[in-house]
Amino acid sequence: MDFRIVWSPNSRADLKSIVSFIAEEDPLTAQKFGFKIIERVEQAAKFPESGRIVPEFGNPTVRELIVNSYRIAYRVNMDAKEIDIARVWHAKRGIPEL
Image (tube, rainbow, N blue to C red; front, side, top):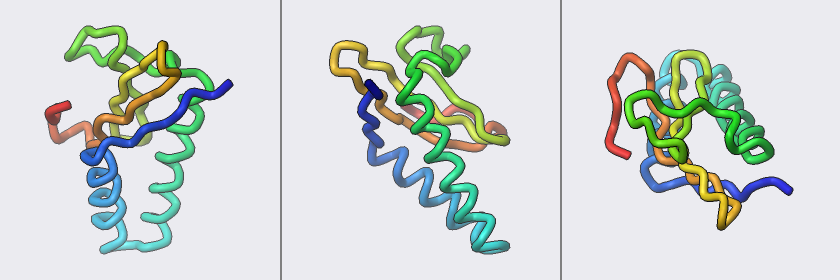
């Protein structure tokens, strides 16, 4: 059974901001990229521990997925069978608050 996906308000805002930024140059590419991120998160719902442990945190419940140059940080809650998407950001921008 797939884990439930919970997008935090910050992660929703992050995704919207990324897609809006890309859409300034190419709306179709922006839409495709947004769906690519969502698709990757949906894959993680099937295999919640497939993302690597975020090296900067060293916490096995905080993992990340990489899509192009973007990092998707999420927490795995085994008891609730959830993955909580914390943030989505470009790797060159450092580490945001989770």
